[in-house]
Amino acid sequence: MTRIYILDDHTIVREGLKAVLTSKGYSVAGDSDNLTQAIRDVQNMQPDVVLVDLNLKHRSGLEFLAQCRQRKMAFRCIIFTMIAQPMQVAQALSLGAISFILKDSDLTTLLKAIDAAVLGQRYLCPEVTELAMQALPLENSQHPLLLLSPREQQTVMMVVDGMSSAEIGKVLHLSPKTVATYRSRLMSKLKVDDVPSLVRLAVRHKLVDALDIQTSA
Image (cartoon, rainbow, N blue to C red; front, side, top):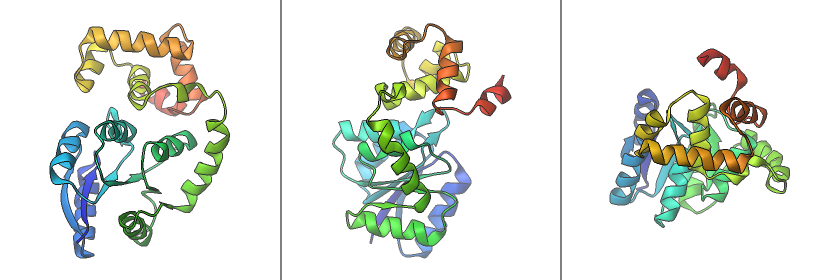
């Protein structure tokens, strides 16, 4: 029986997935809304497949993939997220995700992705296939955000959200001083001198939505 783990920051999504997958004959080994907890769980439980949302409050499914890759953890990852940008699709696949589908896909698509993953076969829903094609020029360009690691990209998003170094450190389990160094380094990589410039760059390259910035302002 295929054993599945779910990493998603919405309780109702996790509960719904558990009910549906169990009814279809799969075993749900565990679930979490916390990236750090999920890494520990996956190491201990060793599921066959992990369903991962990209947006985990102030963390990222890409960061989860990067950390699991560093630890050489063996499982098949399916990105299961609401929306995505071409760059995110490219990065997820390069970090080891075997499949990528959107949450507005039907149940048949999700089950096909899981079964394909178990067999070691890639599965992309049609919308993601289009995004992957759009990502090809980005991979061969000097796209500035490709210079950043998944954690650095997530730090950019938290800075853009107006979080202080202390607040970011609490989320990432780092000291404020370490976060300040981190911020300085990534801004140097991106060749921006201040937070407003960083916000404009993030919006321009669709790491965040301009409407989100206006709403949170």
